[in-house]
Image (cartoon, rainbow, N blue to C red):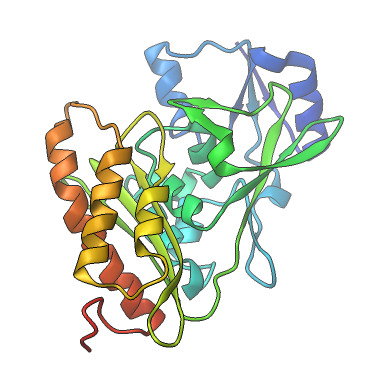
Length: 290
């Protein structure tokens, strides 16, 4: 196996163009090195892109744009601002501090784990990915890019360079909540991100809900979002949203938790998320109190 360390984006794209499927991109290495050690991947070339400084930028002025090499620690520190607290909270739960210091948001996306913490948070902010090759550039929604467990729509000659997030409107709150044996250094048993926007009277005018570790890939729950839209956050609408989520997920039994346990924790997680979104949006509690 050959290791190619590059100092420019053009050089990286040239290597990808030459080696294609035989090339594995390496940044922080928190996932790739484990997969190499286990024999799960055996690339002919490791393309080391860690030195590409232009892919480390985080720009929250105007359009919110995250370079693919921004680390989890960068995001956990709140560099995106209060409108993207779900992203910061998700990044803060990815492994321990050492993992967060070197692990990158682009690597987390391209690894496409069903339990990835950052993916639900990115989904509720309508993340769009910029993919570059030596010949062209394209933008694709995150929910179309993730195809399944460790399966994405990235072409063999493409490099993920940036992630763009939809700006939050007024009276918007977002949150990421995780059920695990510990809040960090533990793969999520269930992860749930939510972003809600409200009219002045407390009516929900935009709802986005996404979950991880409940199926072969993280997903948006269209049914739950519809259940919350167009009304105030009442117990009935929140219960309907929880029922909708349970109808859309397909959790499995694994060493971390059973499918039944995952289903049982989702309603409480969703209820807590609505409370936190309402509070962060400045609309009080879902029951209209406070």
